[in-house]
Length: 397
Image 1: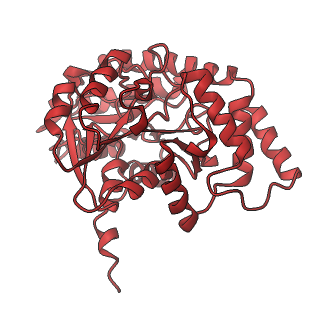
Image 2: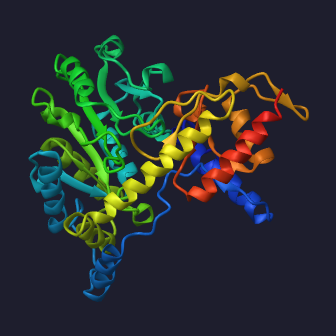
């Protein structure tokens, strides 16, 4: 067998996808498994968006699109940014990609050189550090625990900055914690970053519409750093379009141009039909977004209450996304049936094999004392799942 490249050998497989696969394998054996590991809405794509896709097929949108996306979609994104966020962007500052995951990776590959440092507040989404590694950059995690609602402070940020710092990746609302930075908290970070003009701010706002704290706040609103902010967003979470694969950046023109050049060489523009569906998502009726947000809020209240009834779990009250991220370290060192729980990875595997509930180890997110549990499933499933979790954890001693 030939060896893989050094670049690939340096990467780790996605733990979220690995846990989802393990749960599917158990299901295939006829075992009733409730999957709380996957980060996607359980709703169907709204009908008016699907109709736009069908019409796009009938209208023969079957040819290559411009690399950064159709002008109509980029104009719709600019209008959304102005209407919803009060931010001014031109179509040439928008680059549409095959999901927000590619959007983040495009930016890192376009701006990071060997030895450049990328500051990543932890807990972080599993792919951020792997993307930095792929870009030949150096990860600089900055940890914030549950006692500070998993949000870093300006002092922590400043302490992490060196003369090699090239970028920071922020995610609010956050995957995996659901934490949301307030406007004042973002201003505190922006004021620090304003002193370091060489640092690019990558702001992952893919969970923008799943927000229980009121108006979404973007760090791009602050004039002292706006010319260095790259907003990453897309249609997957807010419009239940994960499988459609459409993300985008709104960026300084030079970064958008760089990403356009990069993308033109390895994927070209995203799916033509998906782009027309995304255009309908942004220009059509927005009531579907609020309907899903309200459902997620109801579920959030349900799971926070259920999780807080489980002895040993420490749970905050997340203000966005569709995850809870409980500290489960109280169970480390305990055993059942010959199996000892040494870390959150052991606990996640134990919950899957013994309790038939799939979640993800916090170690994958830079927080080894925690587990991530998605509540993007039905109320009935959630009540059943947390009942199983409570029973399964009670067996440990």
